[in-house]
Length: 293
Image 1 (cartoon, helix red, strand yellow):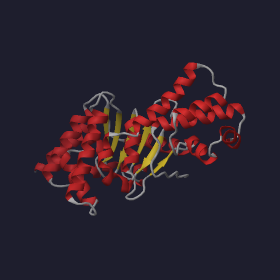
Image 2 (cartoon, rainbow, N blue to C red):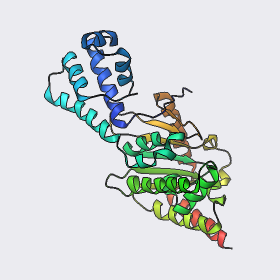
Image 3 (cartoon, one colour):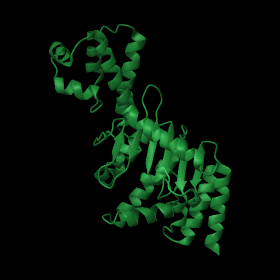
């Protein structure tokens, strides 16, 4: 499996811009060296722009469009709109939390999640961040991030709550499909009261039209989701999907078609074997009641 690592994954618009500029250059038959020579710019910088590793300016993009013979005003405007949109996406709401986000590259994931239209999440160990209660999130972060001070923990809790407001309650909500292993609900995080509140939130969230929650029961035995958690992010065309794998220090995203297809197949397998949404709500309610006994 090919793993592509990046310190800060590209914004959705930057990925679109990179692909568009490379497509236009390929159509002319020009090499990067030839383009760099004619425009008198650094070849390495052009390469990083085409790879989506860095942004660019409208001035340089206009020069590239001139060189590539793009005269149609609508086509030029579409490309320049991507430049401006990428710059705007570099001023996100989570920037004020950068001191606690940057060490684990969590800000990179937030940039991708902010542009996604669909999120397919497999979680064999914890409730997905977009569905966590504040108390559950606080218990998870404080126990898993022993390196953080109490104020830093609270900052990450606020980030998690703002993510929910942005992606599930905002004007442009994402479609969330979450598959959880039953172990997620059987593991007491925080306290029994925290778990009851968390299960109540899961049931309420699953009743929303743009959220689907399914449970993988213990009776299923082993399943592909036990390899570990992952999120498949779907973006507006023509941006391709990618898979996000979170690690403690250096998270990884996969964007090759083969990798994305592999994880999509796994998610579809899990979706077909998990309890359906109604059965899931019934099972969650039953487990919650067991906590009271």
